[in-house]
Image 1 (tube, one colour):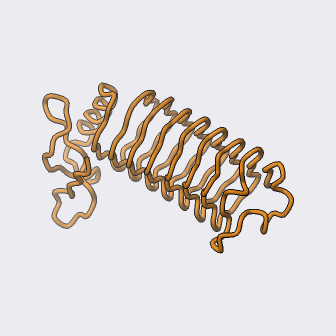
Image 2 (image 1 turned 30 degrees about the vertical axis):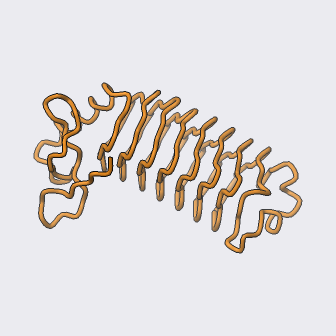
Length: 223
């Protein structure tokens, strides 16, 4: 699940893209990264087709690829690497993600509704007009994200981390925030209405939100 080959160019430290064999399955063959691949068009189409034709995707490395107008509904991703990928107009209802990496990825106009995500990382990612509503987002890393006009409403964010995140017009209404970390966030028009903000942590001293926002947490609303 965690096979991550380096690019065949000896001085390159990037991870190689997954190789899809003649039977349409992921192989352990070594390959190049997106920057050095001799035929990028073919490897992109191979990976897109692999995702389209498989319900369970294990150990896929697609670093740097652009995914546009693709349906991930009911897909199950295990140990996949999507670092620096761009996702545009993706529909992904009821998708399952375990131990996946989306660091520094870009999400635009994506619907990740009813996702089930565990032990995955979105560190440094950017979300614009993206919905994670009604999702199970457990013990995930959103440190350093930038979120614009996006929503996590009605989701379970237990023990996830949003440290140093920039949150603009982003909603966390009716969420489970138990042990969720929001250290050092920058926020503009962010709502936590009806969420259990008393059980979230907003500063590294371990103090609850009451110390910073006073009585505003009575209804969970933070402006």
